[in-house]
Image 1: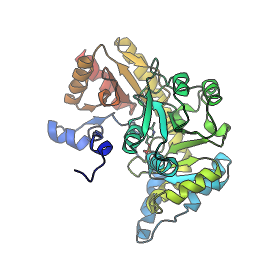
Image 2: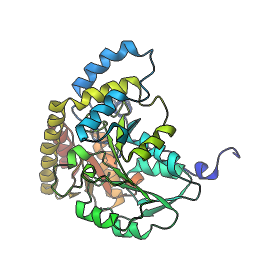
Image 3: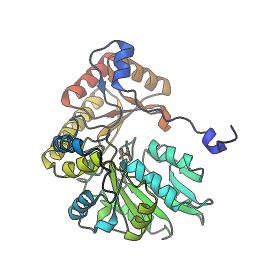
Image 4: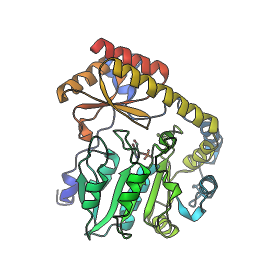
Length: 361
Ligand SMILES: Cc1ncc(COP(=O)(O)O)c(C=O)c1O
């Protein structure tokens, strides 16, 4: 159709992890575990749920365009000014605003091939040239990415930790990389799994060095259990934020999302429980997978990626797990056809997954 630009026509649809209801329907099962989308196995933050329930009677009102309450809380929490904070419909919503704000028609982007698929979808839809740099040993290859920077480069995207591998770049690696990047290039540091990764001593919490050309993105989707709500935030130089604010959808995030985000930030017990259950679950998977002789990639996020002998083996294991009521993420659409990503669940979910793997093997 002539109306549709060719770079849009050639895009493939995003294929999400299978929803629980679909699998229940297809397999006629009452109980299905979803360990496929790195969601919080404890559910949403209870404080957020309580606050949302209270705000329902206000839904005839538009949300505060400025998001004052939540931005103030974030600014206080992270010791920055409110003008350095942006809110959006998930961190993906902010990524989309970043591309619409900063990219001129000739501008290019650089990122890792086979990293976060959400960025890939948005980047491909922008119609700009993108240098997808292969990863090395399941890690971002920052040296090779720096080598791709040219006069047209406008944005570099780094997911730290990466999804789907769960690997991270260290402070030293980032500092060396940063030294090679011109100031006119914007670096997006996507820290969607920051809360899970921050306890590693060499993990570069990007709040500790605020460069003018770095934007940090974080989200309430993972550690706070609010993926279905779509709320995320970013930190950057006030001039960058000011311009992003001019371009973003004025009434995003929704009133209910702002309310939930504010309450979730105060839900320290829930956050601690989330981190605890994740740590226990990850240790369990590590040990059990090793005992089963299944290869896995060390992760600092809320999932663990397993590596199989071949694409067909990974595909068979994914299907067999599904038949036993366990949805995991086959990583072929991400570009890792021999890998399966398993989100860390509750201890019952984790045990059922390992038992199912034992049956398969
Ligand atoms: C690296 C990474 N960034 C961003 C997101 C999406 O975050 P949000 O739900 O805030 O858009 C995800 C979700 O899977 C992710 O893995």
